[in-house]
Length: 196
Image (tube, rainbow, N blue to C red; front, side):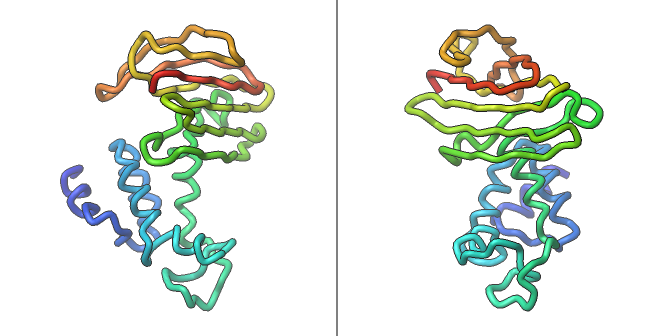
């Protein structure tokens, strides 16, 4: 099944219908192939999300064309879920965002991203930017929640700072890639990771 999906998306162009977009993005994210979704989103010609942005659209048109009748449709808006769940890495670890996971992705594709998700418990904010050989991640989670931050690192000797102070973390590996896991309470945090 995975091989068939990878073959069908090898051209990195959107070919599903509108109803299938959410499942396409979710399946590729589940396979850790957000690079494919990113490339689909950034195609210079339709079907393309970036083309709408470059044309100055502030809402999604009805069709994958430059001359759609309706200029305010949500039909193809499933990319929004991918943006906050996969690019910013905001997701719920328990019922209704009582525990929040922050695990931004696509570090190899972009240098900066910032955004928020309005959950039932309040606004969750995330911003990351590459800095030299490392990166900085700023996170805010709402009151009466707790979180887990998952940061890509190069080894278990990586140095992570929070507001300029070195902090400890749990070291895990997923699919051969090392990560630091840090538990947080509600509030705002600025993490700096060196040596990426």
